[in-house]
Length: 244
Length: 90
Image 1 (tube, rainbow over the protein chains, first blue to last red):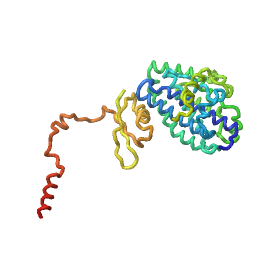
Image 2: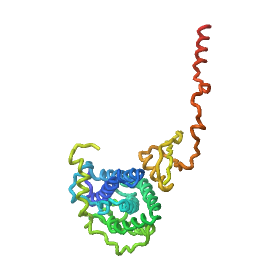
Image 3: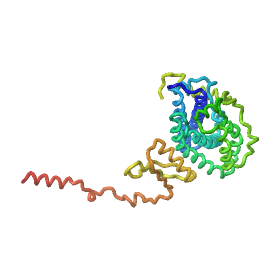
Image 4: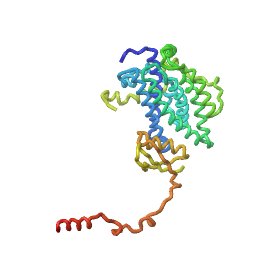
């Protein structure tokens, strides 16, 4: 693999890490989702995200396992939203909607990327995003109607909004990566469109009061990362030659 | 919650085939859940979902009160035997 520009590498790594960890978190619902059909559907969506992560990692490395799983914790560039445990179904569902709404904008910004292969990955992912979004919307449509479910969901929304805003924080070197044509717009510029979508779906939010966590350009990990990192690496550490 | 029967059609001239069933709160949820439960590996390219309550049914007492109906079956065995006998005789 030819040498890749470090700023381009960082940006693609951040996108890949978000997908990787989101997929990991979603698939944790296998076997414990509120009903059988959803159990399968939600984990399957997580598998789609893992698939996207693998495609992105392949753009920057010849050894996916090395980058996805053997890297040191400090080298991850995920946002904290995807590191959050979300063991309550309302939290998981709200995050699903918030993340996929943002992700759609993100893939759109990559369709005409200068990075060979990235545009194709983005177009492929966008076709799957249609389904992810429809799934999240169908559940919200059904659940936001009733009292208790509505209350729980709106509470989750308030709790997760600051983390979700952190999704739009770019890694260092984004300007240079944009200069190289990786993406057609900065991450932060997608936020307004996303906020409008949140306002339209729920109710108008006082965005100036929503303070994202201090992720320091995605260089530091949230307190939940360590345990997740250990779980993700369980198999590869047990058997480095394992094939999956 | 309602129960939906799921039918899938592969490409080409193949007919829709019953893939299974699922429970869902709304028709829209039935569609998105059926997609992941029955077609996530591209098992088909078209899907029908039918609310089980909308299916017109008939029971066994009406459809097949008697199962022993040899007079309705003809496997051609006797005719074949007669023709064979005739060929040999000529």
